[in-house]
Image (cartoon, rainbow, N blue to C red):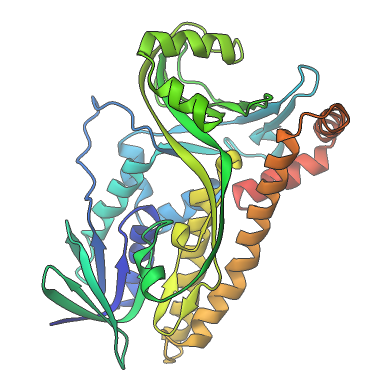
Length: 388
């Protein structure tokens, strides 16, 4: 039976980043992941799942050595972020106001994972169990035993980085508070006549936001929020039929374009009632999911990585039990309030813009106008979004 210091269940963006962040400590680390990322080819179609990587998240990826691999593949920096509802209430954020070249990068999720896996392969103390399914979790005196295809491994600390339906969270009997929003999101990859854009924008409508995320080259990702019924109907359309609906429903900013691919998912909110128990800790979507309106999902997960790696490193350097409840409690104390605050802010944002009563509409558009005129306020929002 193999013995590891840490077993991370979930080798996606957050789990793989945590492995790379902890590996320099010399701890033996196991990564358990069912789906290994496909190799990269420049001619491959863009993935549907993309993330807006903040400056702070980029720094983490640089620190663990993964950003160099992303730079060799593809990403799209963006300088501007614009949001509006009424035509006279645009709110525009410009990275130049923060003396920065860009607000962040739009990167395909798979390429982030692939870059992190490339970096994991440079560490002798990281063992990857790919195409593996965990059949059983068993708590023992020293940690946990994980059984995969009748092959057990032991670990001192079990990390749940396995998404919103976390098997680790369930095995540790950690409850959640949760609800589903009354909307789904449709992701639509398009090819445009325009060259690579440097702006991401979002318009609020009565049925939900319409957004554009720029991608490398003359590609872009559209995000269509709407009722589950509407999204199901859109999903049944041909690419040409969907294009005509986009032309009718989206702002007239796209120019000529073609639809390449699409997919959809429900919007949900999940928050673990605790981020840790004895010898178990949760990170990323296993601990919290958020409405994607502000694009902060994976950035919050990367903040978890930074905080947990810091606490473990400090305890390890002091020759303390880096897996103990004190270490994990400090991690929770640093991250749970911030995650809860962002979840609550997005809920207020969602509910406010879902309300179509005239006084509420007038109020929120007035707030957008005032915010546009507030240089200090805009800088504070950008500072948080960029993780500075």
